[in-house]
Length: 401
Image (cartoon, rainbow, N blue to C red):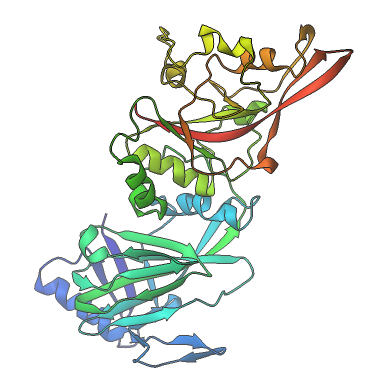
């Protein structure tokens, strides 16, 4: 669907319009030139004032009240993605995003650019910005975003020049627009505000390109190391955010309700062609010489003849590293006060949560102590009966299908 821009013409009382992608016709070129001629020089904030300096920023703009557009980032799916990927780091309870159209900016050759800067927030609820690049022929002019030593470059001139492209980033990110060497780089800028909302997008969102996420390159290099993912090796990442993964509703909402960096990691693993699941990591101590855990049921070499698709991870040797057991599925909280379990509840817990011990997970991060959820209550019998609890933490596990 073409993106239409309507704006107040140079002559009083007139309205002009143009549509993107810009077609190679004289009419389209004329309408684009009319838009350019209707713009004003773009300023930037410095010391609480709007400053115009072409040595620092060379661009033109239309303010929000001077134009309108049929483009809607909500219906395009961008806002849902932003709410689930960016918002958790701002406020774990605010799950919605309001996008407020701010400006239309044009950076034109031969020297349109904007040196590195950090935006000034418009209110306490603003947490970032959305930049939407409209399909208009140009060369160079990449958007470069930096934060804490990491850098991401969005070169829209070469990636998908005939499509609408976008980037969203936090307000404390430094960013710049590199020099445009040919054509016109036309963008819509939106201010992003935190609101209430819901998100169940992980694994179901086609508009999010995992290759544009900062972790993609590092994880791709790791996965592609010769022989690294062979012989049943798996990658594990403990979830950075807390999920009540042992409580009824959340059991059925993961992985779709993953948020922030957890959602990003999940999408990257899937983009790399890995089978990716969310599983509980049980927090319990295991003696390495315990005969119970040396049975064939818990051998790395055991064959699994199950055809149940729900047990795909078990088929791939879902693993334990050190003293943590990875369950075969997410489970609701369990309570068993009838069976006399061993001291520590080890045998009963393993029977209830999984059927294999694995020794080939590579953990990329540490499991967070504060992210555990109560998994099971039981009666343990040593010198006397006492109630025991087992806890689990949610983790993302990836392996070759």
